Length: 392
Length: 183
Image (tube, rainbow over all chains, first blue to last red; front, side):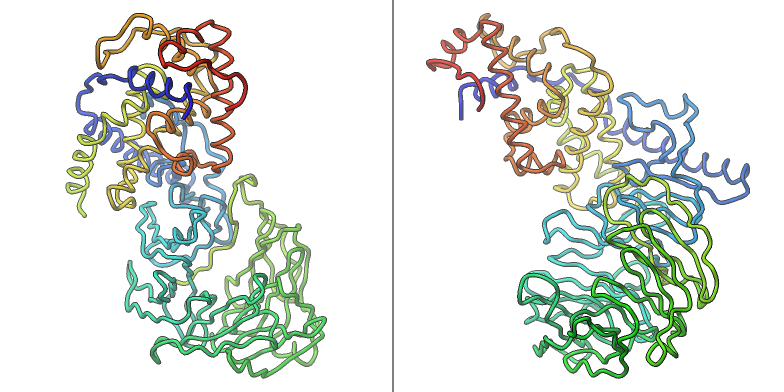
């Protein structure tokens, strides 16, 4: 350590001395927190009366419980009741679906829920008490899944090297959370407000959970350090994981059927052809077509009844009729999406889909022209941007 | 956990850790009045986030991070020039006049640094945090901490030489010279 560094240590320690006494620091903080919470309720109530819609209760960055109107805690001496907060452009924007927008959730009804302080949000699901949010803190072992309730309170449900939230299907009616920690792969159901029925196994430490399908977990790994090229399944109900990984025949898994029993896969041809397959290790191909244009980075979303298949890519969406795609792969609807490496989609019901890319939500239906896209506010929010699937 | 339990735990935390946080806030913003403001803000945010923070280690890390973020953002908003040295705080021990003078000069130049550079110095040389820990609190990379620290130290060296206090530092710390330039 150098001379100047020593001088800094000496200077700092001599400058601070004994701090002056402050009366009831904790009490003051508690009272200010109470004022912020009361203001949150008051502002929200007034907004409901004036606009006759449910408007946004926002959250201040850094505090999931504070309101995002006005300066709030931004200044050193905030006065919660002294000023009229300026309008917040993020709040009150109605959207067709909830979206994850960097460090916040923009709720369809116009509310904004801050996720600041939880880590980098990567994925979220809408559940009855609020949202399941998967985050990471750069270090893999710091990945976590949180339950964020309607008021923005967050409680951590699981953390580990990898954490994954998977949606419920007919096979798995409740959302699933899977994670690896200390060399064990764990999976649990989200029930009520927490995880239930955790099942663990060893031996899958080179594979990560990808998807809940066919009553088990689809696991993926890589032999080359690049794209997933190793696949296997673990069925928690059948006991410990038995390693039977497969590779070669499948270049990508791009989605699952509405009933959660089978997978949409791309074979290893050049260019790859789309297939409907049983889970690995067999990956038995049930149907296939080389006429539907699907690439390994695309994602297929089946409509709730399975009638329609929405294919989203980085720059477009295409809808196919699931009954005819294997014999007559003609698109029934398609459109452009402003280029975005992470376009996501979902179905609101069996005839209405939404695609989110480049801060725009495009809503459409099979056989009809899509509406003009809805702009999601704050295009500069950093972090993952994705549609939040509703699994309530 | 009920609100009553949260309040009790929070009060315990404040009783145990507020003096330490208050000192850090003082070094970040430069005077006790503003340090108290910053600390109040950080504690309020910490209380609001208490339920999701869980263990006491997470609470303290969160509070410290909010404190640093609040202090540096407050400084950006409020500070528009070099702040004159104000009343000396209570001293931990009797001090020689010339040593105090040198510390005063160094202190003034520390507070002329950009907020982030000053925060890096406080975290590294007062809190004794590692570069990785400092990076985590500031929400930057280790490389940024290294570069900010090197720039801050180089700037201070230049200022000290310009102010002619180099000889006194040499005498005080028994070295032959304060090297100029980078770290």
